[in-house]
Amino acid sequence: MPTTSPGAPGANPLEQARIAARELGRMTRVDRHDVLVVLGTGLFAAAERLGVQGAPIDLTTLPWFARFTGPGHRPEAWSVDLEGKRALVVAGRLHLYEGRSAAEVVHPVRTAIAAGVRVVALTCGAGALNPSLSTGDVVAIRDHLNMTAVSPLVGVPTDGLPGSRHVDMADAWSPRLRALAHAVSPIGEGVYAQVLGPQLETPAEIRMLAALGADLVGMSMVPEAIAARHLGAEVLGLAVVTNAATGIAGVAGVPPDVDDVARVANESVPTVAQVIAGVVHSLEAPDAPGGAPPTDAGPPGALDATDTTP
Image (cartoon, rainbow, N blue to C red; front, side, top):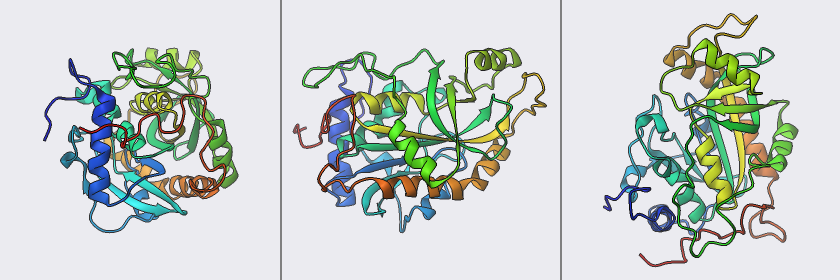
């Protein structure tokens, strides 16, 4: 098993993703995946609703995959037929607050894209900054504020990749996929702020984020979205409101308990699974005319597992 972490001096995280994708294909006996679904805190039960069966893949047996240590996050995945497309459903993620580099955090996303994925669905639990949001609401991410001061693109070699490292993030969260999500369920939309964590935000920080235009705050998703857009995939983000943030006038915020956050998120599993399945159902089959989803961040196949031999 290779021991050099993605992002370590001299490592090429894109080449590492290609190698991991070939091993994923060997383990799943699937040549190509179309969709990646990442399940956030408290959303593990959505896997069953998305059709997973049997024993999962232990992701730590794939090259450069680290063990997830966030509450309720499991380094497990299933390859399933979801609405006629091949989906890789992952039961958790790494976070920056676990002491991992941005390259390690996004390695599963890069591996999935190297395995053919063109649509990435990211989910999470989040605190509400907007008083109009209620606990249990499912919100499609429209835009984000990266408050971590970290990017997974820093230091990534660009040799052999089309396009630029200066990725346009104007439509980081796909308007097309959001429109498909709204056609499935009357969910809301909002701007998501990611903080580093693991400590929760102070009341002053909450007021600052709200003043900057954020509706939600959490500790994940943004590096994954950046990495996905860099490689030309479309991104759908779904956040479940698990608590009201403290410090906002008129909002009686209560400091969240981790177990309670997971419980609230779990109650929204049916809606999250329904939206993801509905969006995937609406996608063109990958082998149909015009089946490749439109994108402006990079051409399909920008990170192809068949490009290089380890």
